[in-house]
Length: 449
Ligand code: GDP
Image (tube, rainbow, N blue to C red; front, side):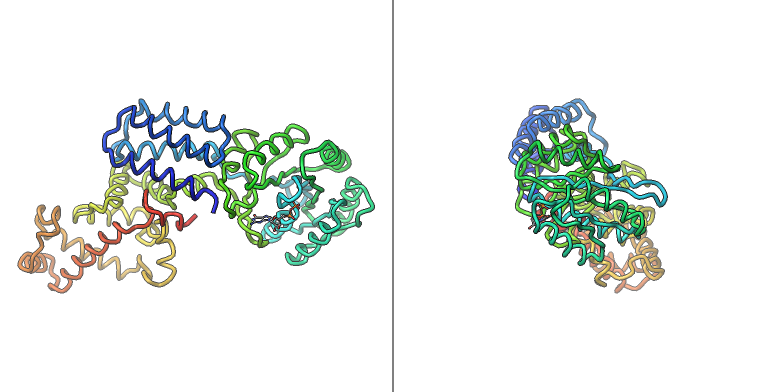
């Protein structure tokens, strides 16, 4: 998977930072030097890395550490935010013509980038949205490309328009649009011919198509495996014919992934989708925020922290996330967290955002976490905790049998229930310790992304 090595390196840097507690300016600078190396090794564009490190450094040094976050976490937070910004912040949709008007999309890219495959993948996405796409074989140099488009179109249940290899691409495009108008197609996707390298003929041909028909969106397909070449190709295409967005393919491969991090910053054009495999379903919408948290190996923990921040008292939320992370939960936190969890949409909603735990609810291991019965159980738990002394709440290890009997009497429950609750509490603490990937462990890659 792309970014694996970058993720591992960044996690090492952050682990070191977190272990330090208080950070000096030199600590931050040293850490950022390592981040810089890691990004360069991931084949991120040099200028992009330089600007990125400068931005992070400016923000990290001189910024007050937020309550509840330690300085190491503050740096991670800033790196995450800057990564999101680097990739364009917002998710960009392909702009379609309003109403039922026909949208013409021209696909461009070098040979082998994955253009023909991606064209068919995209048609499938549009079909799912209720559109009626028409694929057009404009690659007249590679007879195999026409056949490939036809086969893939058939698999997707989408019509393919072809005039063989004896006509000019611009004429094929014109005829295809007439056909689409008659046929009720509201999206026309032109699969154009690539070349091994950028060359004048290819650009002239694309230009000719643009002059012959009204192209609403020009989408460039680049191969992540080609690293910085992909970024250069994107820059050239944008200068010569103008592109509206980029699709980066083969991010599933063993690539360093730097292209995905550099394209927006270098060309100003957003990444629309990423190709994650050879199957026609392997095309994913590009979310800069999810990609950043995936690169940092954090699953959706950041979403969780954000959600907590939006709906709760920020200090409390961050403190809670921090405590969960360190597994330093005591009964007071338990009480506090029950209240907060309610506000955040219940335990199951939180579980679904934890890296590695996302599927638990769905698999029936933790069914129906927010049921009425659970509500009652939580209320009894609260009663039991309220029957503890402040010392017992802070130090759960104090709970011996005689203390448990006293608590049971105070809460009006039987001793078995107190035992169950203490056991459950200890188990959740153990589970929190094991939470894969929480700001550190490797399992985070299996998060919800
Ligand atoms: P074109 O010359 O640009 O039209 O490229 P093709 O669509 O023929 O793709 C070239 C090769 O890349 C084919 O073997 C595809 O199956 C493969 N390919 C395309 N997209 C992806 C992707 O996202 N991941 C992987 N692993 N392979 C891809």
